[in-house]
Length: 449
Image 1 (tube, rainbow, N blue to C red):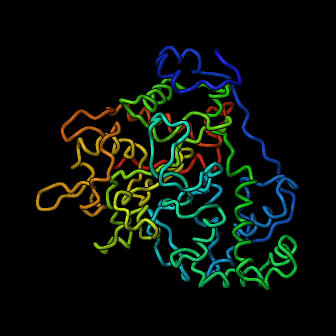
Image 2: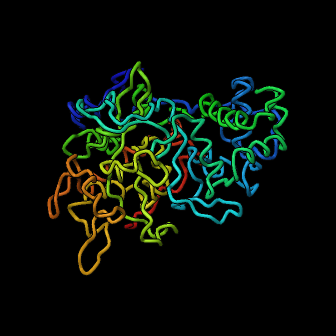
Image 3: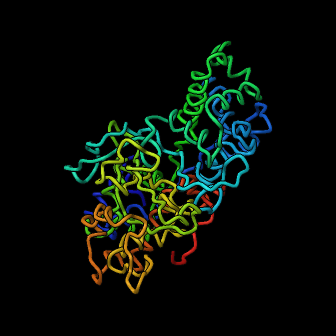
């Protein structure tokens, strides 16, 4: 039975009607064919042979984006000559990491550990410019004001082009000595002729501009290639009337929106954006969540090492703004179930534990934080002077120790079931996610952190 066709059933309708009433409309809806992608018949260099899941249609990308695609998979752009952008942003894993490490290894010998979990590069299209005082369109909180926008977990990059420059030069990632080293690698590499054709015959005579052009080519690839914004999740199919939620997914969807229960939609916006943009599942804003310190990150062996997000150590312009310390950007939840580690420091390895942390963080702090001298140390990854920045006013994080959590065990499972509908690659005809790596990745164990 289908109650709508090619129309969007909004989350407020789900909450208003209730799970039982809406279930009759959406459970067991119609089918949607898996997105078809033509085979790539164009020659490829050995450096990009892993490009198998999402080949672009010949002639679909601009010359600049085609060049960016080749650079994205080019290992010669790293000091080790063994690492490319795709090493950490695998297209087979929703452009996130292909493994379960909290942080990835890089550097000249691929033996240097990073300090933050690698985010996905999908669904960055409508990221606004960074602002300290911004209203979030579509947010349930019409009075919201605060930091918003920018690229990377601390918003320090103003564009995809600037974002691309960061790993190229970071000593823990591709580890080039400077922009000139990157330009020299392109000049002496397999794509030099294409680079000259796109950016000019004398491009390598101007290293600073050539380095910027590398970033622009990578940005063009991410803007133009459909694999960075496929919108092929079960959620998208349901909202267009071509599939239906299960009863459990529907319950999770209602909890996701309920402001007194999951309240997830207050930050992970699940309504279309301005001009009918597809649902982003983020407000691009920042929050301090008090995520536990992750001892598996080598840098954390130093008790003086702290990652304060907006106010350092990588972002330097807000270091004196104490009220922003501990804040990180809210990521999109699209493809969240393909992840194997969660939050900025990869402290969690289970999506179930992530949802449980939100609702039990303050009601059962001993479950999530270490003890010292017999006392639980909440928010232990932040220096004491910044722990007041942690959000304790918004549900489900508005309950004190010993209070009843906003979600019980069954409700947590229901929310997780809904979150799994946000993975790309859904095929109703196959009865679930398409059988390809980005939705068949390990979903995370149910062990405690």
